Image (cartoon, rainbow, N blue to C red; front, side):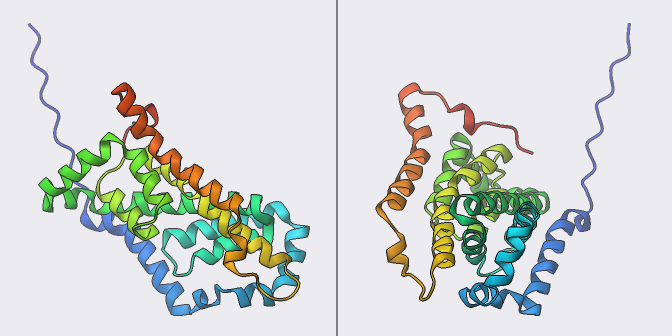
Length: 251
């Protein structure tokens, strides 16, 4: 007769300082950026003043410029730098609407994922322990269509971008649904602002009005992407099943 297998010992909780370390690093980076005042240079005047030098560098080092810009964009989003919209406009200004959109989408998704993982690692367990019933109720609602909720929050920004990053992390939204929802959800506005930047870059003199840039084609594209967010709800209503993309294991 074999001896019964002893129960596995519960995993020891990680020290508080270790769980907080990623968030503290991001917070320290944000404080350093704010203290330096460099974020105040994120504006149209800076782009116009450095236009010739930037265009020369991009023309000679396109791949490297795209890589560097994407990394800087991701870092800016991960620490929630004020005025990050100018990174998207700048991407269109330097690389054109298509490449600029790609840079903005990839950079913002990477940056949003960094802060999502950091916040969830540090505070998700605390949120469940402190606000257990309330958090559980929200988690149940989110988990049924996590991808759709994240997508809609990105397409229709009722919360600030960094607010969605933090809220979804505390609600333990599956990482795959979060990344896909963010990746697709930021595309429409990224394309709009990259087009704005590209048009500014081509303008010889004055700056075009945003109303002049919101063409019927751009508005139609935004509507199409917004409709995508409701497709999982329609799928579930018709079939009674959750769309495969809304699943995924939490990281």
